[in-house]
Image (cartoon, rainbow, N blue to C red):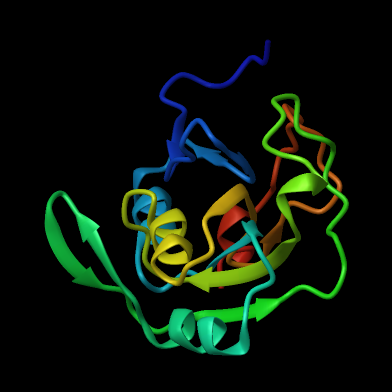
Length: 161
């Protein structure tokens, strides 16, 4: 285990089925800034099927999802199809195999973060999310950090521009 300072908190959350970058801090103001709509968060989502250009446009301009039984139109965001597999470590829990048809990886960059938003967005566009990774918060990148790995960032605020 790691010896984190007293008062360490996660900035934002990842649900139990999501993977990737999670920032920890003892600075409540920094936590608030990172969770604000000023900071971009980028995710790679592996989805069921080959995402059409029309679906990418739909995701970019906003889709209607449900948040606590209330309809919500997502804000415009950046979405693109990834041309190659990002090469993440194989998942320990099998999702599906090639018999079920093609999958596709897309990048989605948001400044908001509703509960299970990306999963709801891709499902609304007709492409359920199979695997989800947060790969960037502001200018901080996941890069090759292994699952469970930790790095200490100095001058944290210079990474959040």
